[in-house]
Length: 425
Image (cartoon, rainbow, N blue to C red; front, top):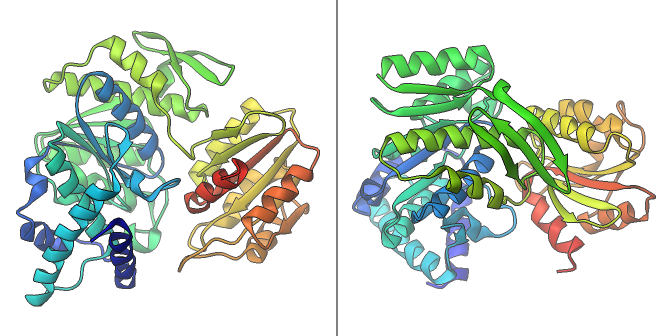
């Protein structure tokens, strides 16, 4: 099996949809001799911020000399970015080899009468195999959609649980209230473990605190109101947090300061568990961290071009806040695309009033939303909206506007194409 064969094999599994639960992934991993049991994990769940916190932690741990594996979803720029070793995407040859191993395990499952695993279950198993073969010191493992019933929750050796901000998402699977969703996310907390989260909705904190009490787990809450001395200059954010002074990060958006302090507190708990992490490594790791598709500047000449994965209401609110901080007096053009199962009406309400012109694009796949439907949803909040036939057309039209900033946002799925087109690739 080569890389192309591996990708085709995984794509075929899309027909099996989304099936929450641990039964099938447990069988699949058992057929693989449970590679996850030979690894140590930092498990990350939440609605927004998982990728950013994971990026900060990955950078810090790499600075500290640890061989880190990282499993993320979805991919933005490159399919292989889902599985990384010390911030480097797994190579095609290694990915194909591990996919072949998983395919053989799936075939054995089917012969025994078990259901076919989903795409996410297959990719999770591939990641476990890759990390095992690379003998990673620890693995930063992001949940896919939920928590308790998420395929990643099969792990046992969890050295730290990180819960980022939680808001309404995937309500058809996780529940219709913030309490139900928080309960599902809290399902990854293991007995007698360390847990760190960010100060957020009191209902969420109550559920996390109660879960930790029931499981005799220690809960640390990052006090984001202790962030001080904030400054932004030359695409660098500077701030202080408790004893950490003059912290610098290149990841933009004021919300990233909150993700950074969550990573700092996570490192303190890791140090309590025996990890050797010096403050200097935390500073340098935070500064060197970079994460594609999260308020990322992909063109730094006028007009500035930014891409951002603001695909739900909470992220849209943060995007609006960031725009108000950085571009309050600038002329802005938006390019927007999102999925049909997102509350795109609320996203439009939160973000679109600030734009001088908006171009909508159609997303792809089973959850696709066409550009015309999105444009109609936006029109009550900003009439200067036009549905475009393609991403390239939307970008070309945006460059014709006399604007200061172009921001493409919404589903992470189309941002890679935007970046490649803008960069002439």
